[in-house]
Length: 249
Image: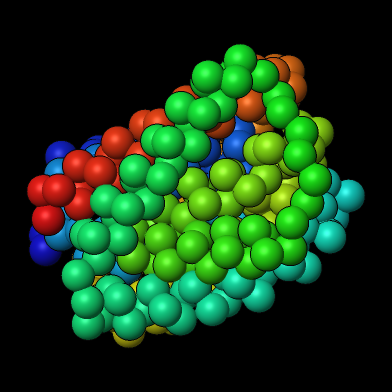
């Protein structure tokens, strides 16, 4: 690929949006910005370029999402499932049709959001379930590997717990920090990090940091109910995008 001004502008917009989601919601909604990148580059190239950028965003975001904002009991169960899911996702991306997974995940997410809306669209609370956490972590690992969209499974587990605003965002951020560190190697094996992609990635680092900071500013302004409603709305948008990708593919 060649670096054109239009390519740089579109890529910068997509990277900023992804960083913004990381700062505002702790991550998990990276797929919102990926369609923008797919307008100017091959999706595999986009995923290859984004994999190291995700790690840079995560490290920068740790200044906001400190250990006091992590729900350690949940992470201790979610992370083993994440590790297994990323391994499964690597083989799905390499050998199998990922679009069926996108369709199934989209439909499950839409049903989940619909049940929340029917229940009054509030902040619900349910007890923790280790089995559900392992399943959510595994499903998130698969979808974050095949489509950079591990947010829906994780959100479907965390949102009904009724965590505080910073605890929800911090736990999500730490979860994807670990996940992005694990998957950067497999993504670089699948894709090809050309000189053009390296150049765009380096140019995108300050844009990513600016997005994280701007998102953090929004997070401070949202109250608990607003944050949860925004997360559910993003779940629907993400699910529709996954459904479109799956059906089109």
